[in-house]
Image 1 (spheres, helix red, strand yellow):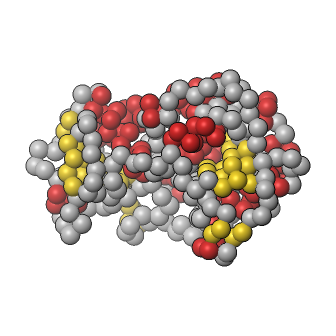
Image 2 (cartoon, helix red, strand yellow):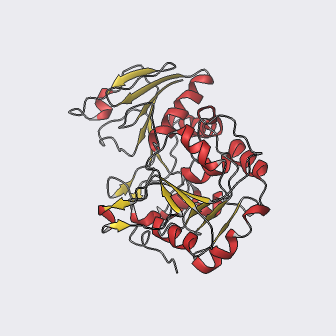
Image 3 (cartoon, helix red, strand yellow):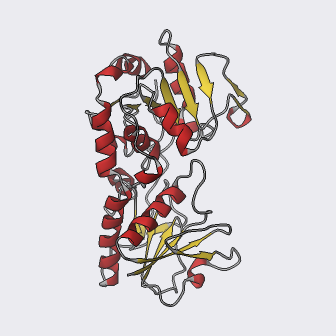
Length: 327
């Protein structure tokens, strides 16, 4: 099958990356399965296993798809209604670019689809070869936060407050800075909280394989949460709020969910009860790029055979997905 993956980003990613990391891993897995993969992406991209077409920002992406492509997989983009070639579109965030959901829509978790009034979803997967084999025998101390700390709904403030209320505990903030003007001049004095900004895979591995757990008290419905499966892959349990995809991803064997800060403090005391090997195997087996690719292939084949993934419908009210309870 000749598959084009369209994403408005430079590939491959060098540091954190979200959607682009998932899309690149998907392309690699599809190519390994024998499919002919093309990326339509931003200038400066390179890829050893797929054809790369530099996207012209002055031309609609669908008008840049070569004639030999069997199906195009757009990400966070809906082609014009007069474009009649086979395609699917994955939405990676809450809300979509138009006021309606097209029949070839795919979301990234069951809850993500449900909140958009749909039942078409594929879990994100990662290319674990990029992450290496973690040393799960290392001793662990302190906790970590992983994500875009500048985004208020990620609630790094809540994570910091929890750690500061546990005597002697520390936290490594991966993806945030001590000073943040966007969040109303956030300034954290505590010497027990260490900020590292955006980190690459090597630094991420070094911090998380020594962490007692990810603290992730988000106050919105998380569509998926790559930081969840990354932390689990490195053997770290997850302590998070029960919103969005998190009840699907964080099963009891690998973490706890609560929107009560006092309860979360008590739950952190159980971090030593989790088995790093079980957490690692759970993430490696269920959220890898190969599993994701096989599930996307089912969607591609359905569309190529003339089927619809869902019925076209208006976008439902999405006003309740932010600023959920954290007490």
